[in-house]
Image 1 (cartoon, rainbow, N blue to C red):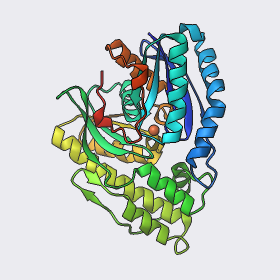
Image 2 (cartoon, helix red, strand yellow; image 1 turned 60 degrees about the vertical axis):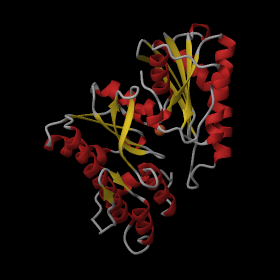
Image 3 (spheres, rainbow, N blue to C red; image 1 turned 180 degrees about the vertical axis):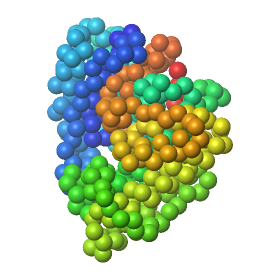
Image 4 (cartoon, helix red, strand yellow; image 1 turned 30 degrees about the horizontal axis):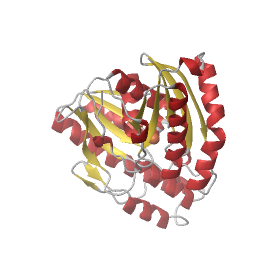
Length: 324
Ligand code: FE2
């Protein structure tokens, strides 16, 4: 089934085309945050302005026409309301025009499932790390097949924490990826470390790091912030692997693009003779292909949603979504 998927939950308007589980194209336009971060109304305007050209580019690169599309998927949530709405409207308009089925997709399930596909892992412990989410999960078949959350952040997602710090210290662009660049070669400063079982908290670490601005070098604070936050994730993930006797670890989501995090997790996996896997950065960043991929599985599995039930949900949790 040839499925077009639309992602618009935050800074990225992405469109992907998938057929038989194979990604045919994956196009996107990303809002430029500069040093100010995301202003929801402006990000939504960016999505409106770019939606047509990205849909067209995805079709062209896949070598198909609009009339070839057999199903539509879009991100239902979680995400920023104004931004989700743009993808929802484009998806519903296309589904109605083409008279094809449409399904709402959970953004987190998109990240996890494309990570699982690309890593070739069957039933891994999943560390899902992005702007709004930081969770440790595993597939559960009861009461229906879904991702059960074993551990998660008590407050903000790790990506959100890194972006917040990048803004506070005025990095340009104010993304966590700028923190990663500045962390290279830094020295370790003592930082607050909060892990409780398989849950963790980032706000104390963020507040403390912001208080160090001006007292220590940018390099040393960035390095210490990353090392501490990633160590917390490693400890909680290792505990989840031991408790579930899991021999596979999949890391996914926007922060899975960070090379240092993957290096640290590799040590954890090696320690337990477990396999570690992840998708290429293109699929860990927000993208439309992951939505199309999950939508195709949902449609193939018989999932059908009436147009009037194609809603958005800003706090749509991963464990609320059935997986196919
Ligand atoms: Fe994401």
